[in-house]
Image (cartoon, rainbow, N blue to C red):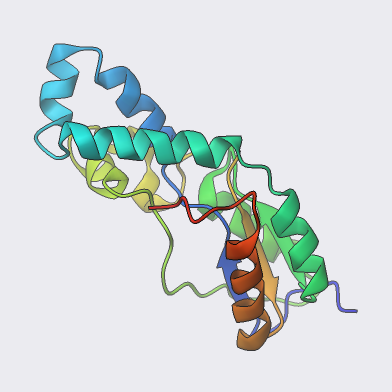
Length: 167
């Protein structure tokens, strides 16, 4: 079995980004001035949904994803935590034996957190730059091909520890 990310691997991220922004949003909701700024971008129901998704994400272990990535022949992986998505992706690329470029099409982000990070909450969270710290973030997994990635995702979504809670 390969232990290195190789060209044409398919990257999968198992949890949405934005836990840091959502966690701070919860605090902002307690302060009238800060909530006034945030509520110009996100309504209270959407804010509470984002906070709930963030809490569920942080409370979900990566064990099921780790077991499935081995089953589907992953070539490499990293968790996404304190260095943000970009920091961990760079670390994953840096430890490979051969030079690799990681190309991304789409990243899952908790609904509303991208807009908050770009607007009311200011640039401090650096979510849009890939540098926002995540608490108990997901795994960025390099799978050998699209078939393996699709099978991984199908099984991961069926796992009882991951009941389609990411919105």
